[in-house]
Picture 1 (spheres, rainbow, N blue to C red):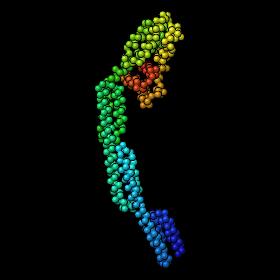
Picture 2: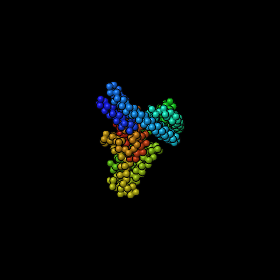
Picture 3: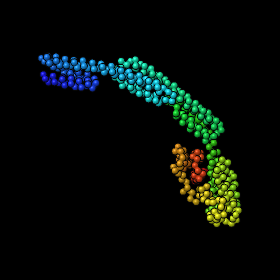
Picture 4: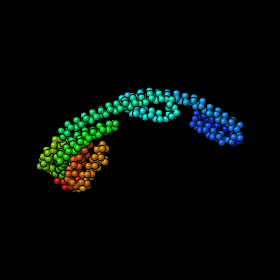
Length: 400
């Protein structure tokens, strides 16, 4: 008999602890368990059973009173929190505040999902008001996305217009730069407008095709222009190397160099000016010394206005006479301090140039390399050295 009595009292004591903690779920479970234990007491213990039943009912009454107060307090708190959420949301409905609005909407939805279902019926009005403000915020967000899309699309359309003008003028370098700008702006477009993005992508994809067509049409002439220019430079530099190696200079050789320099197009004026200065110095030496050059030191002594001329010429003319050509075929693009993406393109086309034996592929790879080398803004010495080695690779493949 006392075993039943003590067990039910222990359950009620634990239930009281849960009530004091406002842990109503566990308190309710404790009352249910006490009622089940009461049912298991035999009827001959009627007096004890009646007393325990009164204890359980008192605990139920205490539970109901305490939970009612708790519910009123929690509903009050939830109403205040909902009103606060509405004010916070309306406060951030500002232009260029898209991310904050999205985060706030997400936060509110999570907050609502965490409210216990037994309180929802008491918060119908507040929840309805909150939903209206969420709809308002989402519509505002949509308008912001539409405005952003239109703005970015107009930027792309202007770039496309510029692209077509450059295409008419066949300005391939500027055309590629503009195309890259179009791609960058396209990537910034919001994801909401999928169909419009698809249509715009089709148009951009057509631009890429027109670039390829233009490059193919101009590829051969551009290739030969760059290749012939590099060959001329290399020949001139070899004449200079021959002069320094043999220590002999004569007007005929210098005249031949002069004729070679005249064939260089005007857009290569930097290289041409440097080489003409070098040639002028040698003409002066030839005029002052009608005998053979005896040494590099004699040049230094007889040309006070051209100090360190031979060293300068070494900088201007880095290529060696083709005595050990294969050792100079390697170009190390990894050490160049240039844009990583540009370096990646250079390395890619350099590998194609080395591996391919197909004349058309070689022409395309060489042309691309010359284009990207110009974009890299390398120093004169570095650029000429690279182009010279590229020419040696072409020569080693006996390109016609």
